[in-house]
Figure 1 (tube, rainbow, N blue to C red):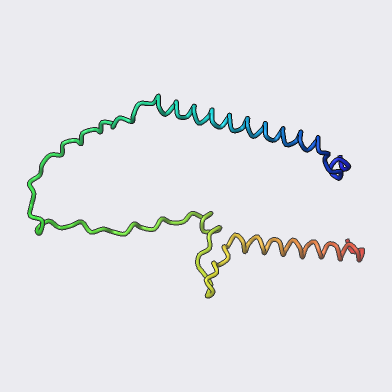
Figure 2: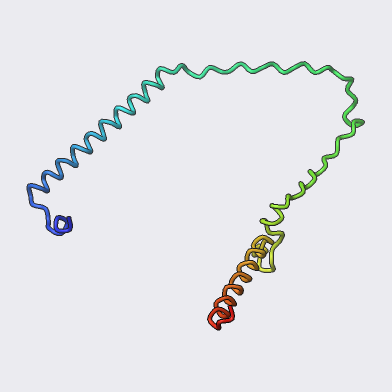
Length: 134
């Protein structure tokens, strides 16, 4: 295989390769034209989108209307903040540092502490095992 890539193509091989590439391009163009014709046929066969009849709004009983000035407008209250779940509190950071960098979430702090403890325990095991104490 390697020697086939290293040797240049002869004129006959180059001509055959070009003919194969041209045939492939012709087939792809024909397939693309067939697909476009099929899509046009589908579009032509579909009837124009008729407007959908919308349901008539239900009749609302008329209430005696008071002048606009005497009607109090309902005060828009801000939505109360949803309490965060335990998982959200553990995974999401609660603020930013002075530099605008988000604070480290508690779950990340816990994982770092566990990794440090595991690394210290492994180091202690290796040292004590080499000293013959274990």
